[in-house]
View 1 (spheres, rainbow, N blue to C red):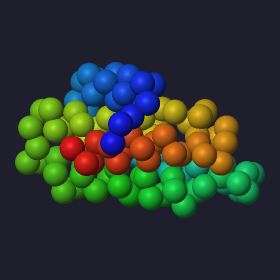
View 2: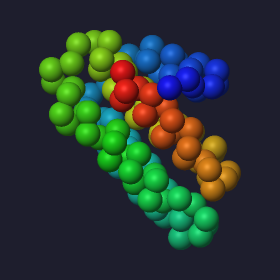
View 3: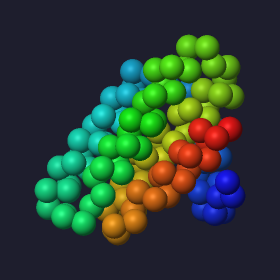
Length: 111
């Protein structure tokens, strides 16, 4: 999957961050998913189901792959987690706000 330049740059930036614990990543994702669910109560057009699917898809490799993954794979696993959490402003701007999160996550999971 070919990612737009903006997403490739974001993936590279998050890939280069220091490794974080799975507990910290899980807490960030869970909090963000909860924040999005809360935001959906005020925004009927927010695709909270897609946000939930992204959160679950971010958590799965943390639970299943992290312990046996090498450093580079761990960096790939954590990149979409950080992106999902940190681009909240984009997520809330449009009904398509989570599409970039899903695209980045899918591209990395494909690897």
